[in-house]
Image (cartoon, rainbow, N blue to C red; front, top):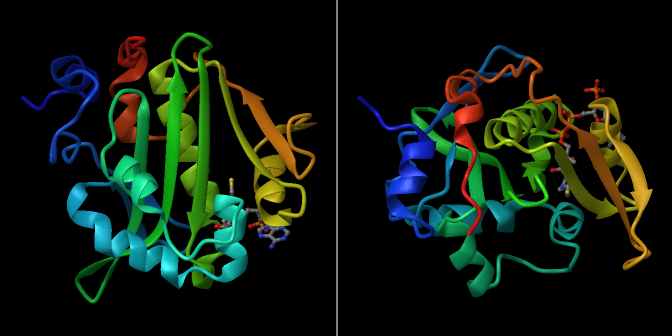
Length: 213
Ligand SMILES: CC(C)(COP(=O)(O)OP(=O)(O)OC[C@H]1O[C@@H](n2cnc3c(N)ncnc32)[C@H](O)[C@@H]1OP(=O)(O)O)[C@@H](O)C(=O)NCCC(=O)NCCS
C-alpha cells in the first residue's frame, strides 16, 4: 500500500530524496475541461523549470520574485528542487501532444508552531486569466488544511492587480507590511473542518500534521 505523505515525511526526516514525493500527484479539472497535474518538483526538473521561468514575461517574473531576475539563482533553484522539512515546491503541468509541459508553479512553507502556511505562485503568461490560478490556489488551500494550518498567506506587490484580484475573490483580506512599503499581505483563516475540494489531499486529512523541526 502506498505511504501517505505524512508517513513519508516521518520516515525521511527533513531531507527528502528524489522520488520520495513523486507518488503524491493531484489531477485537477480546469474550466475548459482539461486535466492539470500538480506534482512535487524533482531534481530532474531543473532545466524545464528554468525554461519555464525564462518563458515568463518580465512583468510576471518581477511579480513572482519581487526582483528583476531572468531565472532562479542557483541557491534558490537548489531549494526549489529539494522539497523537505516544511518547505515544498510544486509544478502545474498539462500534457501537450503527449509531452508534459510546465504551465505553473508554486512554493509553500508551513510553520507548524505558528500554524501558518505561506505561498507564492505563478502561471504561464499565455494561460493567465483562464481560472488556472484559482484552481492552483484552491489546491494550495487543501494542502494547507491537510498540514493543519489555521492561516494561509502570501505577500505581493501593491501593483500586482492580478494576484490581489485572485486573492480577493478567494476570500482573503489585505494588510500593509510595515517592513516593506512595496508589499501587501493577503491572508485568510482556514476552517480545518471545512470541505476541501482536493481529492488527493483530502484522503490524508488532519493526520498530515508535519512535526516541528
Ligand atoms: C497572479 C496569477 C497567479 C493569477 O493567475 P491566473 O490564472 O491568471 O488567475 P485566474 O485566471 O484564476 O483569475 C482569478 C481572478 O483574478 C482576476 N484577475 C486575473 N487577472 C487579472 C488582472 N490582470 N487584472 C485584474 N484582475 C485579474 C479575475 O477577477 C479572475 O476572476 P475571473 O476568472 O472570474 O474573471 C497570475 O497572473 C501570475 O502568474 N502572475 C505572475 C506571477 C505573480 O504575480 N505571482 C503572484 C506572486 S505571490
